[in-house]
Image (tube, rainbow, N blue to C red):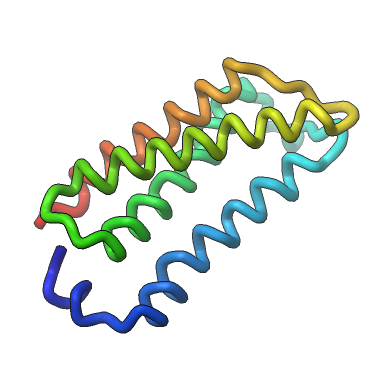
Length: 130
C-alpha cells in the first residue's frame, strides 16, 4: 500500500476503483442475459477465449480495487481475494445463464472465467510492484 492510497478519501477510492467493478459486472450480466448470443462476424474464436478475456478484465479491475482498499502489505492477499470473488462471479454467471433461453451453461466456461481472473492477478502483480 502506498502513501497515496492511504491518504485517499473513501469516496474517491469508491468512485475510481469500485464503481468500474460494478459497471463491469453489470455489463457481464447484461451480456449473459442475451438469448442466443453469437460472436461478431470475423471473430469466430472459441467461446472459452471470450470467457478468459471477459473475466481477465474483471480480474484486473478487482485487483486494482482491492489493492486500493485493503490495508495489507502483501499483494498476494488482494490477488487471492480477487480470484475468489471473480471465481464466484463466474460460477454465478454460469448458473444464471442456465436459465436464459438459447444459452448454455458449462463448467468449462466457469473454468475459463477463473483462469482469466487468475492470469489477470499474475499480470497485475508483476505490473504493479511496490
